[in-house]
View 1 (tube, rainbow, N blue to C red):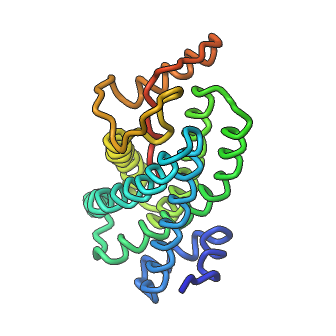
View 2 (cartoon, rainbow, N blue to C red):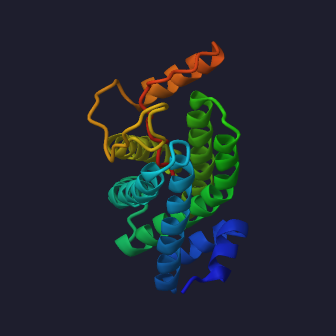
Length: 234
């Protein structure tokens, strides 16, 4: 069952949710709701991304987005636990996981809210580089919303800024790598065959996003460029 009261609180009062996570009070229901919300939102966003190519790509992207998001959270939670302990917050593991999942729930709700604009961008036949950048911006905004929960969860005290800075760096590396391994999500424009995973090696995610921005600024519309995944940030 989804705890809609929790979803309302995570949007309107993330500080109270963070405090509840730190105190380790009634976190089981929060964890279940967070996981289900993450699954639903990432599946919907993935389907919208895959609609650019259509056909099987919709199902492939809808399947891979949840794997990328949940996999990133699973790998990043221990890093947050260690960094918090090193910089003066030696919490038990369960409150840390609860805080991460709550941040993921807020990320998911914002991502779900941004899914219709992305789908409309694709439906209006926007250029391929623009679609990639819109998907990336949507992920970035959702990630900032989720990050607020972690910031509030850390509270005041020494080492807060360093913990956040290091964690964001680790999270971006994990999320970017997961997304890159699972690509393509959008699908290559004009391609007839749909691949579950790409076998091509082409620089990296940051290089491709910068190239897309450059192509868009010059009015170039690539026809055969491979589509990188948007980064998975909560």
